[in-house]
Length: 193
Image (cartoon, rainbow, N blue to C red):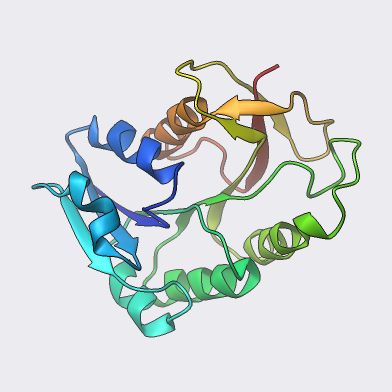
């Protein structure tokens, strides 16, 4: 059995990730959201829905208990959220984190995205400086295409592509959860080339 905490479970990417993870019968999910109605469609025997805010350290730490993997696909005050996640994971001896960031945070796209990427840069720095078994995932712009078609790039390499389907990202996240050594302490770009 693998317990997976989904932070930002009502997000457009998480709603694609959840069915992929539920396809494995050994996975048990905790969906952590501010509005439980937004994920009610996933309620079931292997899904617990918890109302809370990632910026509330006590709520987050409580949800973290007994988890094996944490997936974070968030928006808002990303640096503070990343700090709370790292702290709650330490408190609860949870090591595996899959954290969604953005392409371009290292200048690897060759384009200047300006201040737009600053929250992603800051939160990525918090994650990378932790002692967690993290995978920082840097997707291109999301599409709703039904295809699974992507290439990976790694920190220090030029980013390839400009867009990627949510279905593709979900496929790779499923692989990261299944394979406990895949992508450990790596920052990985994902896009269709």
